[in-house]
Length: 308
Length: 325
Image (cartoon, rainbow over all chains, first blue to last red; front, side):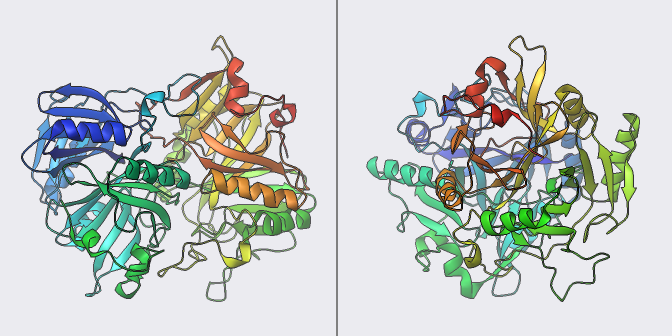
């Protein structure tokens, strides 16, 4: 049928132990598999074996991200349509990677590697699946209580091209769009679920990553999360806590030890989950400072230009 | 292209009948903070009057579609729950599945049943409510504007809960198993939470979803097929505490639980009634749920009902287990 969610993010990091410490002790993920040079981590608000894979490398990067498909036949379908759209496509057998079933791997027009999969080992909510207390496990005390991957923000040399691919091949649509100076999409927030966005597309070099966003449970959880980050000596973005005028969400940004930008994000925003139903909200460049940083109404250039 | 999301993709509206339409409308507008749908002069004329003396169309400020809540004059009841599908292919596929299940889908043309609603079909769920699947609904756009909006509660609604969107509808049924089986097997709903007797033999309740919110319909055991509650979404817990103060100041009696954590669904909520007996819920949170064969519901047993419904409260609240309309 279709994409269920952006379900896994694979990052290369320059110090695996430090990265694991950040994502567990600060963010609240837990390690489900650790093997030579790699760690697989899961988030509490997701039922799957892992959502984040960290790989030791000499540089930090977004190695790939994964889309979970709702039907096993989608992999074959995707091989066809992605191939027709000009992407190089290959298969990865099930069992090659801990917890993960068969995958179809292809590249987006923006050069990002995408792993499409249907099967991933099922674990269940971290809180439990039978009569659970609706509270985080004690093991995550003192973390920012990241709940799940909310979205990835990726760079594209041509934002419009990637948006077209995501819409026509993968059935995404935009909830909000920044119109660039040339009248084409300058940045776009695209959903395939009923949330505000699952993939944000910003201008930048191919295969680039702007940030990985983790969903918090509430605005209070973002506030408490920033307190935790400051207390631990993790520098947040210069504006500290902010609100994006685009989408009206409460948020902060910071970096993992390898320099990969994380976001802790909260804000309900219903979308239809299918394209063509609701026209996107539009922003002109003249309004962009308010759209990016609503409280400050000023652009943070390091935030705009620095990518991984 | 066939990598498309198919079938029901969103909860569109709930439609209720009440005797004192004016009282229900006034409560929804003045106390709850909904907005009356006004198509505006630029829209083509509707086949019937939108809001009239007999029916009103309402929506929340964060909704782009024309309406999510329809109130009309009549014997008090849940008339139907509307769900959006993608196109007429989806309607045809649903019609065929409903026929295979031995039921009949009643087709209706655009605008025949409700204003500004596309082609639709209605089906009465066995031991459950009537659902209407429709292909499209007018999109007047966000009341905050489609261009560079301030995503803030509109000034005229401040001091009321002014919820963001319709999030789920609770119904009672004498036979939850039959209703749940139809919703899952025929209409493709997933189950995010399931409550059974302690021996697991009998299902007493389920939260069912097509959207990632985890519940679009909540089904509870009850004496008859009735409305249990209509739930509107709020941003988070603290909003609901503040909303509850305004409701109390307006003289609204809150449910005995007051604002509480519902373990069942992992939400935070407060329930209350309007003068016509409609039970409302303001609801925040929930578990992000996936329409995927590997996704599993949380399982609850009856012995844990108190904790499931109100994690904080240690009171007996029999009223909550009764239907409203």
